[in-house]
Image (cartoon, rainbow, N blue to C red):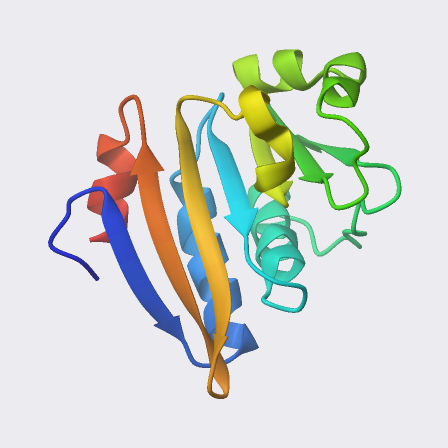
Length: 156
């Protein structure tokens, strides 16, 4: 962890630790919360998203990667979750046609390859950068813009 109240660092020694971390974050999410998942191929972005979605939906359902569809929606009772994988995105404007603006207003969004958002990057977001670290992973979390008090306290 860091001295910055908006920045955190976690060592995730194995896939089970990544699952636990994703579930912990998921319990702290609310409507209009956006998580930007960055890192190289194989860093664990989809693994994190799957674990968070399963925690939010309370379902062990299959959570496919939306690499080709770009967006996949899930019903979590009183909330909607959008999982986006922008790896194959042509132009950021394509996301507006798919409803990105509406999703960011009231849904929980998990966005892989967020650097492809360009100017559409939400001002308020939680950036999680994942990287391989020995046998495990390192997760660096930045809470950007807006009120993240509940998340910050939950991660401390």
